[in-house]
Image (tube, rainbow, N blue to C red):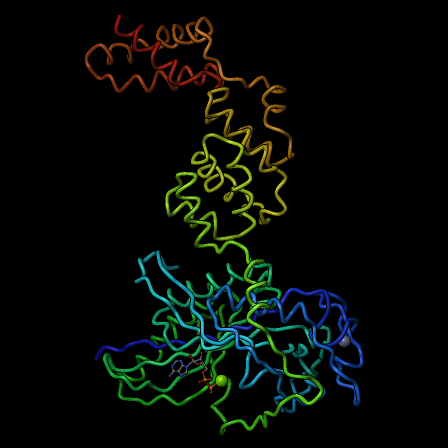
Length: 480
Ligand code: ADP
Ligand code: ZN
Ligand code: MG
C-alpha cells in the first residue's frame, strides 16, 4: 500500500514592534522576567486595550507580500480559555474576520535533503493577529511564569493541507521566514521564539480524496528539527497503518535529542472557546486606497531580487538563491556588486569564503567587520591581477579578522602580485635547475608536469607570482 502525505502548518510569528499589542510595555526579548509588564498585559480588571497600529500595518504588509486578500473590514475577538499564561482568561485574537485571507507561497528548487522538488504554490488559509501569551517555565517542583511575552504582537499564519513532504514544509517555512525578514516584520529567530511552528500530519491511501486522521506535532525548535520530525512521523504513521492499526487524533511532542516523538495528549472533545467580538475594540476598516498606499512601501520580494541578480550581475540561479536567502546578505552583495566590474567573482567570494567564515565564527552578516566596499575592492584587485586569488585568501582572512581595507593589508605585507619579468625569471630558472628529473619527464612528453614547476615558482615567490605569467615563461624555457 502506498500512502500520500498531507501536511498543514500553523506558524506563529512575533512582529517586531517597539511596544506590545495593546499596551505601551516594550516588546523586547531577554529582559529579567516580569519587568516589561503593566496592568493591561497582566490582565487587571477594568483596563482597556489600545491597538498597536504598527503591528496591524505589518500584518497587512505580510499579507500583501504573500498574495493575500485584505478584507475591508476586520475585527478582534475574544477567545476564552483558562490557563495561567493568560490572566484575563481570554486572549484577544481574530476569529471570522482576520486581517488577511488566502494567499500563497511559491516553493521550488532543491529541498533540504538535496532532492529536487516539484515547483508548487502552497496556499495559506489566513493570517490573523493576536496577542502572545506569557511563557511558562517548569522546574522540578514548581512552575514559573514570565509575563514579558504576554501581549507581544503575534501573527498566526495557517496553511492549507497542501504540503506533501518534509522538504516542502522546510521550503515553505524558509520562504515565509525570508519574506518576513525582507519586509522587516520579524527576524523569525526560532531560538528566541520569534517563529514557532505546529505541524499537522496525516496519511491517506494513495489517490484517496478523504483525509486521514491528523496528528499535531509540537515543540519544534528549529527548521532542521521540523524536517526530521516530519520524516519520523510519516514513518511512524505508515508503520501503524501497514500493520493494520488505526491512528487516533493526538498531539505529540518532538524530542530532537532522541529523534522520537512522544504522546502529549489525545485530542480532547472539541474546545469551546466561546469566541465573541472584543467589545473594547472597534472593528477596523481599510479602504482600497490604504492598501494601495501600503503596496507602494513594499520591499522587493526575494524571488524578484534573485531574478535581478541573475539578469543584472550574471549570477547563476543557484548562487542568486543562496545570496538572497537572507535579506541582509543580499543587500551586502548588492552594495558590493555595484562597485565591481566582476560581480560574479564577488558572488563566489561571498558564497565560498565569507559564508564559511561567518559560519565558523558563528556570527551573522550584520556583525562582519569587512564592509561591502572593501569586499568589492578585494575582488577588483584580484580581477585586475594586482594580487592572485591565493594571496586574496590571505588578505581576506586578515580583513575578516581586523576589518582593515585590502589595499592597506597588501601594502603592509608587500603582497602585490609579481608579473615583473626579471623577478619571475629568476624563480623560473631556479625551479628548472633544481628539478632535473621533472625536466626529463617534460622533455619525454609528460607536459602536464609543468604544473609542478608552476607550484615550485609560486612557492619560491611566496604566492606573489602571477601564475599565468609563470606558466608562459616556463613553457618557453622548457620548450627551448
Ligand atoms: P483544528 O480544528 O484541529 O485546529 P484546522 O482545520 O483548523 O484544525 O486546521 C489546522 C491545521 O491543520 C491547518 O494548517 C490545516 O491545513 C491542517 N490540517 C487540517 N486537516 C488536516 C489533515 N487531515 N492532515 C494534515 N493537516 C491537516
Ligand atoms: Zn503592558
Ligand atoms: Mg484551528
